[in-house]
Length: 438
Ligand SMILES: Nc1ncnc2c1ncn2[C@@H]1O[C@H](COP(=O)(O)OP(=O)(O)OP(=O)(O)O)[C@@H](O)[C@H]1O
Ligand SMILES: [Mg+2]
Image (cartoon, rainbow, N blue to C red; front, side, top):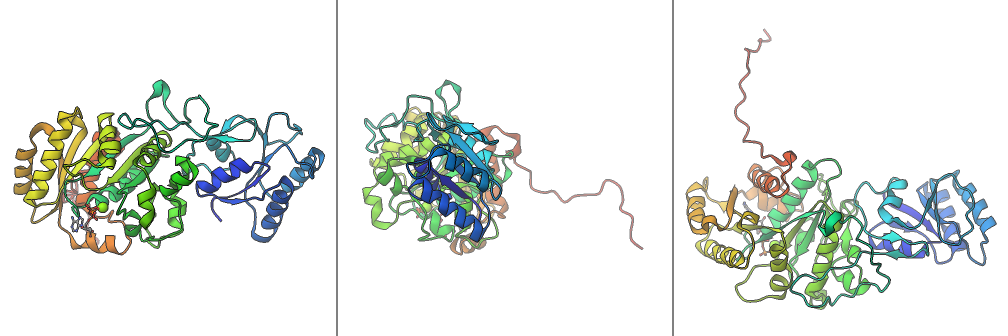
């Protein structure tokens, strides 16, 4: 089974990995965890094992060293050296403190998504502090008391973020925000350079439907609600493998996901939980894509508390015009208000969706209305195939219009050549006449 890992003598790490979607084989005490790992390997095959070089009253360190030596014949065993522990010799030993993602890399499990968090010499796992957004005076979601003062794992030097962030937004419902967010995230993850990590956040608190569109409605995965329970934003992230386990689409989702809370639970999730998971995702990803709920003229906790501050602090916004006059007027008004509040116009873009015909005339009218407040990144024509794919759990990644818009936006956001939009394939003409077969 992919993502299975045995954890012995490191209960905090076991909880951390479990929360992040790993299939953790463990048990409460050192001794029973060792037995469980042993029996599971015998019955179901090998998987990597992380062991503390400590024991407990029932497993003194000589017994631990013996067990580790035996287990290493059946599995990759990495010993995590903790403070004051026995320090028995083992060829594959790492010493705490060390980042959880380094530990996972050591056993070949970190390729997919780096986890924030650090294993301390005490065996505890600390997570990066959660920065409140500029306009939220105090984070309602408490971070664990053991949070260290060190810089967050994955944060870039100088206190900035590793990830660029883009929000999909509209002043009207049903215009294609979620469709665009999913395709943007998938194209970015698929075409990005090796190891380019993308996280999609379903920021539609009340009616999040990313999971539905992924064909995994009610899949038993963590959601943003888990942050309320654990105080740890990392627990809300679902890895691509975890997503794959619940989907039939041959196009494997290649992004990590923070899913919307289920049904009624949305009411218990404060906007600050979203701020915390976005901050967390920005530290462990290269790109964060956020699907939002309708951007209304009147105040809303999600827009005023989370999304506007994010745009004001450097995120990109991609507005969607659904073709109708009201959709255009609403978006133009919201964009103007954002620019008036200090969001740089270079960070705001828009596209026309569900256009009839080639949409060029309507796009020009939109351009006239939007002026210099935001720039156009393209037109997506109405295509029943998009709706058919979305309603049957398939990602519409083969749609050329959506692809072109995604790449245009991605190259503006990231400046990476991998996303340079490829012009529509011209009818290729052979440079030299092709020899005929006969
Ligand atoms: N270019 C298109 N052609 C045809 N159908 C489309 C196109 N873009 C989106 N759709 C369809 O329109 C419907 C609404 O799209 P979507 O759910 O992405 O909108 P939304 O803005 O996220 O809606 P909400 O406000 O409810 O969150 C979906 O069925 C989707 O498949
Ligand atoms: Mg939506």
